[in-house]
Amino acid sequence: MIKIPEYVKNIISKLNKAGFEAYIVGGCVRDLLMVSCASSTSENKLVKKGASEAKQKKPKDWDVTTNAKPDEILKVFSNGRYENKFGTVIVNEELGIRNKELGIKNQGIEITTYRSEHGYADRRHPDKVVFEEKLEKDLERRDFTINAMAIQMSDVRCQMSDLKNKKKCYALCALRYAVVDLFGGEKDIKKKIIRAVGEPIDRFKEDALRMMRAIRFACQLRFEIEPKTERAIKKMAGGIKFVSNERIRDELIKILKSKMAYDGIILLHKNKLLQYIMPELEYGINIDQSRHHTYTVFKHLVLSLKYCPSKDWRVRFACLCHDIAKPQTKKFIKGIATFYNHDIIGAKITIKIMQRLKFSQADIKKITELIRNHMFYYNVDEVTASSVRRLIYNVGEDNLKDLIDLRVADRLGSGVPKAKPYKLRHLEYMMKKVRKDPLSVKMLKINGDDLIKLLNIKPSPKIGAILDVLLSKIIEDPKLDNKKYLEKKSKELNNLELEELRYKAKEKIEEKKMEDDEELKKKFWVQ
Image (cartoon, rainbow, N blue to C red; front, side, top):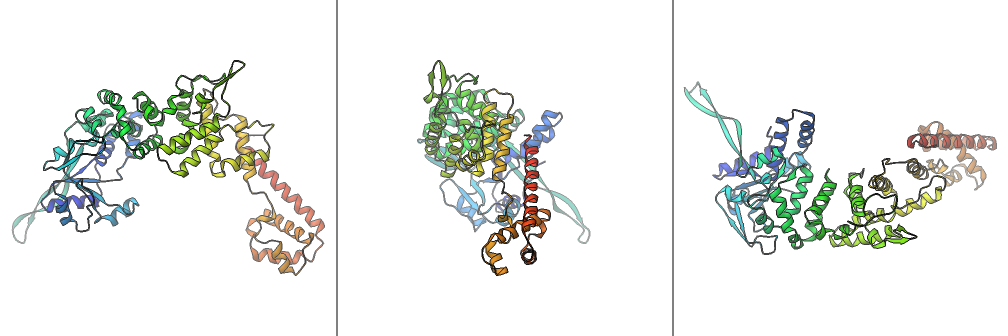
């Protein structure tokens, strides 16, 4: 079941031929073994589903570790680059093959010297890196057991007979793979467990981001965090303050992209990390809402994330934050809880959160526009085409589907069983209707200025009459919408009395508009 690309095999082979040990290591080993484990244990429907998901987890990045020092690696791969102090050489020798197979540009394979790391004063980087001679030293510095395995490749030689020279000879007939697993990573893959290598507290002291990575891996792989490791996260949670906001942002995005985004936020909260990453969310933990909301603000927000129909992490983030201002805006009027302007204030709060976590301006704009507009009004009898156009203008045409998805998530996160009621489908219909280019002469590949020059006539109602007739022809047969036909037909029409033709043309245009409108209504199940 282990399939390793040729360019990776070639790198291992060249290092071996130069007299060095070399292993495939890290996340790619984990992903390979997940595929293998899932395939070999897919006996029932539930396991088969897991196997199918695991097979999609094919390695994209391949890392190699070796006892060769950086200068020795550079002698084997003359075009390699060594631009760090951690023993990692970037090799581009097999880049052409890599790009062809993966579609990745300007990247190489990382080859890293065995190393151990000592002292983490900033809770991020080792104070001292020591190059080691043994693979064991390199594996024991890694974060989790499932990431602390290596694969060794070795040649299998087959005996052959050389009849001409009457002697035995050997030829390479296969490759043998051996998994080096010192900490029970393969067993943890089978049990679907995230477990720290060695003492969890020591691992999290070395790099506090590992606490968030544990949760991210649990979400991406659908694993559980081993109890001792989880207890260490709770104890060391404050260490996340020493991690750069950029690194926290990247992990948060990966959690939101995963199929267990809701579980990820709950794990961040349960393990006391969320209070340092997005404390604004936790302000809503004990905040009750108005009559039609059955949950507290916090529970409503995380459930809205859970039921978000979009896979776009930005829409999911908007679902998570859309009511984030309710704790600040809650007031009682005649005994009823109100949250006036929570959409506008919520957008402002979200801007501050995203700026703090160093999100891009484009992502901030999209997410906060969704939050700012999530309270749009849509009563069927009162919504007009002009009000829908204003909504489209405010939120942007590209965001309309995302806005609907946010509204669906908001409803389901409130405990409402029906995600998309009639009035929301009616709004979708109206959005489609007002966005659809109306049937008009603007659709033609000829215009009034063209006719003035072509027919040598002055501007007059006759030009509009000709264009109407041309449009009616194109409605019947869209293939006729080419300049050659339109110019020829225009010359014919210029010799006719156009009033009657114009009247019939308008009938045809209105008929087509009504047909299109009926199709739209059927699509969105509205009347």
